[in-house]
Length: 77
Ligand SMILES: [Zn+2]
Image (tube, rainbow, N blue to C red; front, top):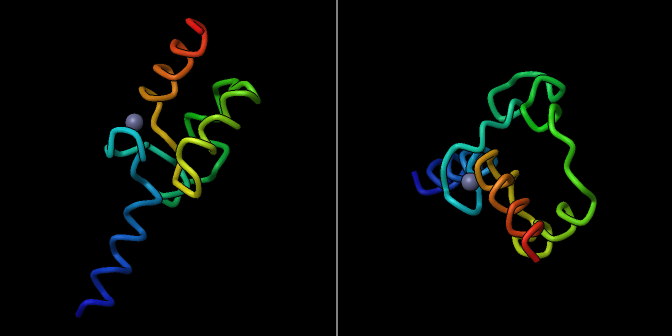
């Protein structure tokens, strides 16, 4: 049953924020259309996307809270 468990973990990780490990609220993970996802209602600067990809390569979407925290941190720099 190991393979079943791993499959479930991979499915789960697509919906888990790599920063805080909580539900990232991604619409696609919950089988809803991508254009209903919260991230579509926000403008995410190019620089931030690049930085998220560098800090968390190959990972799922981060959640709204962490995105806002990152934005605040980048503004402070
Ligand atoms: Zn998060």
